[in-house]
Length: 273
Image (cartoon, rainbow, N blue to C red):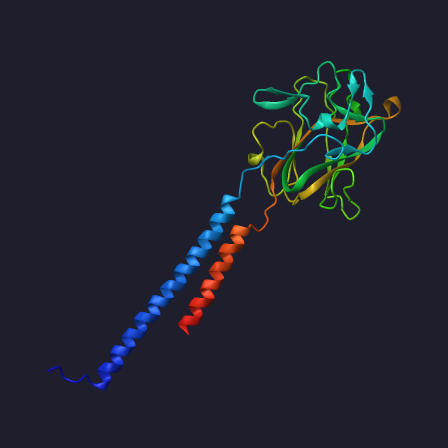
């Protein structure tokens, strides 16, 4: 016959059982939190990507100057020419602007100053801008800019109606005139904490450090390009290329995982108490 358990022994047994339950519940909470954090981290990482070329379409809704382009010897020196890659070549693994003949792979206006606006179609973190100044085989390289004021905006529906009225000048970019060479490398400008080691390998030429500036937006405007007073005024560029990634936004998957994790935590805490 089993002897009766003393009150003290019963108390000890109850304490051990409660400790076991408490430990189990704490493990459940830890597991929920770990799963939640790992899920959020995975969702964030799965949406990340290395900096890539930011596409800019052609047509005035995507890239538009402040005044009409010049009609050159072989056709219009339209804004499309600086985003469609028409003047590009490759030498030594680097992008070059090889205008050659004809020289109408450039853009220029018939004014001594000009603006030009680009629409990415979405908000991007803009890490690098590569600019190839007006590179003319006839020697009119003074058409190119010497300084460019940089502005960004998220207001508007396309490049034509983008609103920069509330945008401050973020930086003034200085750029050398092109030489007319068939091996022109352009110049690089970096932002968003990027270092020289981060510059895409296909880009060459002088480097300009604006890494302290956080550059993000859907619309970019090159304002106050100062060209030449020759021929009554001319301002232009050969090519422009932007590099970066879509600006991060909360993804539905991330928000769902975070919500489930917090809900699970609340349920577990309720049971614990």
